[in-house]
Amino acid sequence: MINKSFWLGAIVLFIGMGVHAQKIEGLADTPPMGWNSWNKFACDVNEEMIRGIADAMVESGMKDAGYEYVVIDDCWHGGRDSLGFIYADSAKFPNGMKALADYVHSKGLKLGIYSDAGTETCAGYPGSRGYEYQDALQYAEWGIDYLKYDWCNTENVNPIGAYSTMRDALYKAGRPILFSMCEWGDNQPWEWAEDIGHMWRTTGDIYLCWDCKHDHGGYYSWGVTRILDMQDGLRKYAGPGHWNDPDMLEVGNGMPVNEDRAHFSMWAMLAAPLISGNDLRDMTPETIEILTNDEVIAVDQDSLGVQGFKYSSVDGLETWFKPLDNGEWAVCFFNRGEEEAKVNFDWESEKVVDELFGYEAGFDEITYSLHNLWTMKNEGKTKKAFKGTVPSHDVIMLRLTPVK
Image (cartoon, rainbow, N blue to C red; front, side, top):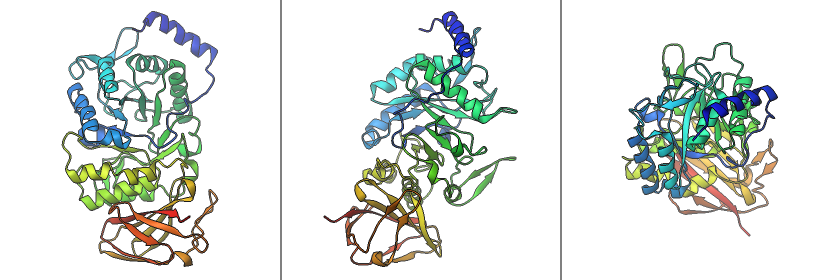
């Protein structure tokens, strides 16, 4: 247990001495994978549900596919005690966060939690402003592995300073806790956050639709394609240990299967964190198939850590490429249009170069085999033009492997 009087003194000492700025390394060498409660449940979170989600993550095959974080978003908070330490709502979490973390850990998973850089969270619960070191110590004591840190109620707060303070607090607390920054891209975190967080949101919240924006009265949420478009120009900032985050997945929350498949594929092409946001306890076989597609996940988790790029766009059919380790490539033909689209891609006449990171496919000199990541079928080689039909709001996704 925390000796709270001792730690209050230690906090004063830490702040008085200053903390050497350092991010906890080695936690996000590839994009983080897990689940978050917000998209499906919002404030309706409790201990029984989180335990059930952890069980389902194992039983569905998601854990085996690489998902590891179970993250409780806003509304878990009870209040602060007389010394300022945060505690969980005892009605929602009667056994406390330490017991819940122990249960999640017993499943071979990790537990995440949520706070805010302001005085209150977005839902009006106690934020961490002024309590960063106490909160970090409490999270470490509970056994927390991941912190999502939001940006509500932060009037007159400097974002670089606020997020750096929590980073330093997490580091000083001594437990490896992945730091997920969520200030919605308002202050261009991609330009300054590499040494602060392991991932940073690039946009406002995702919304359950293909192509829309939802007005909340003063701010907007965005559909899948709107968020995808907002990633333009950001790929140079991402890499192992520091990722652009286009927000959590809506797979399994009500869009058609083809749109879910396209959504998941494009997040993999973006090397985005794969944080599911559906009810894992009640999934269709189609949703499980999408979320546990090992070959698409392998594109996202590729050790090279290079975010994909849009190569071309013609009449709503986009062609995206992503360099992979060992000279391989992923290509995704993404149809955002309302009608099916024909693909006729003559590899040897196309010059695919990632000028930003210095990779070139060299189709005129190198022959690649083609493997379809959704049908699991081999599609020939690049010596011959690839032809196919992409249904509306769907993809054809291929892995290209050099032929020895």
